[in-house]
Length: 134
Image: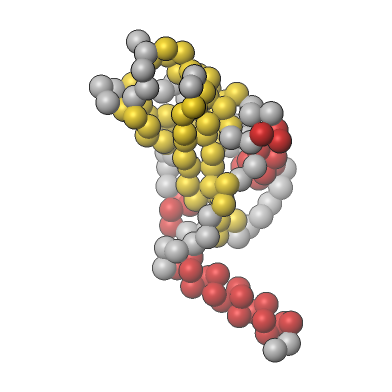
């Protein structure tokens, strides 16, 4: 099969996955978040009886890169000790890419203070917010 045909078939397969909601997602590193999406932060968390809602603000400044086919497709968080690690997922643009506002819901942690960082060791885990649970 010729390279041009193979590339077109690959693009068609990727488009089919995106159209069916099976789009491939990957964690976006901090450099990509900063360049492509203008950075991000966690706005003041909403603390409820059993959960905490972490509202995300993306696009704090104009992006310096343009990747028209790759969009923000998800977000996740994990807690280890007094740190909450947040990650954004990138993938082919789809209807979920237009979802706003972005937020992450986590189980309410024990009382205390927590740093919220972007989960990218190479970038030094940049601080993107904080949480104080009474």
